[in-house]
Amino acid sequence: IDQFLRPLPTVIVTPSDYKSQIMKRLHEAFQLVKINLSQAREQQKAQYNKRVKEQKFNVGDKVLLDMRTPLAGISKKLIPRFIGPFRILKVSNNCIVEIQQDVLKQTQLVHVNRIK
Image (cartoon, rainbow, N blue to C red; front, side, top):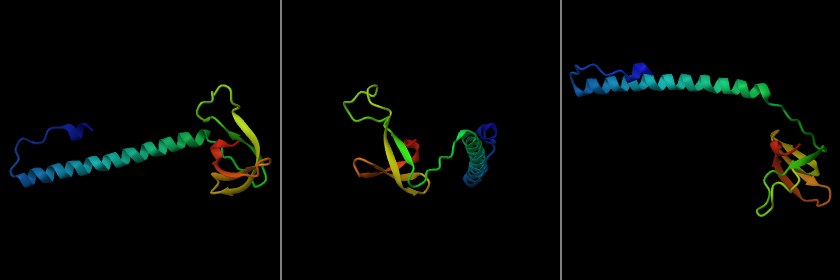
């Protein structure tokens, strides 16, 4: 980054030369930023993949639904963390699941990070 912060040469012949020098430095800076971002993205991906656990759900499995976001006016301390059991009716894209509670017969779509 220091190379981009260094002052421009004091002898500039024309405004078009100045413009071309600035454009060249900006292009170099953008290329450096692209490289650094891709390296950071790969490092973050590697760290995430070290600890992620792939959850596979099949149609017919019984699961519990995470209720960490309660309705307004209800204390989080007093509600159960998980409700259920629910039965999985359909799995879409390995991340969206259609579940149905045995008692209510009402279906809902939830993300797999909300079921256990």
